[in-house]
Length: 221
Image 1 (cartoon, helix red, strand yellow):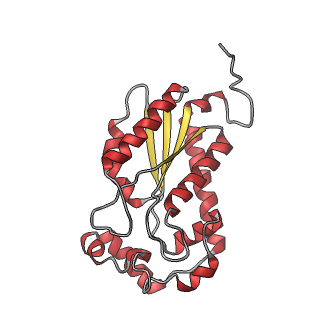
Image 2 (cartoon, rainbow, N blue to C red):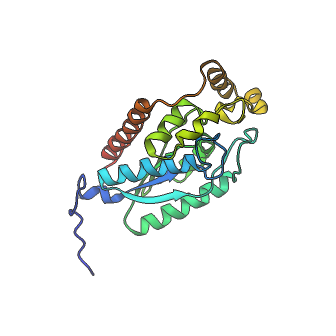
């Protein structure tokens, strides 16, 4: 049996090896012209990996399936069961390498639908916590955060307009606005204020999110 040096490297302490970080987003969603279709997955992965590097917790990767409200039609999604089964796979294999606490960083609003199912996975020897970053779809916050992460095309901001791409702020998603008051309020805000890139805000938001999850990991130890 190899004697592993759990105290080596830049880590909070040896106990952090019992914590795993999972990124959750979506891979197949339109985000206007300036952001890629896998924006949510990339932002979640960027944040999760950086939190792992800073704390020493183990980055377990990104969940491939994603789910969505049936009335939000801006991409290709999967069932809640598909998402949960993938998370179960990561958790089961994480436990084989000594992880008993899991932090899921979710950057896709539709995935909040799995909340109740996630709670069912918790038991005495396995704790799972999901934190959500839910920004107005492809609007100012997400554009600015995308810039900070490095996935925004500034040249394509010229055509990043909800009058051209209906999913921006979900302004043109009529059914979603009719069935979800929160979506309608966000869409109204985009209609009134527009969408623009704020580089300073994007960098601030990214640092704030990373620091927030670093503290969550610290408290999970």
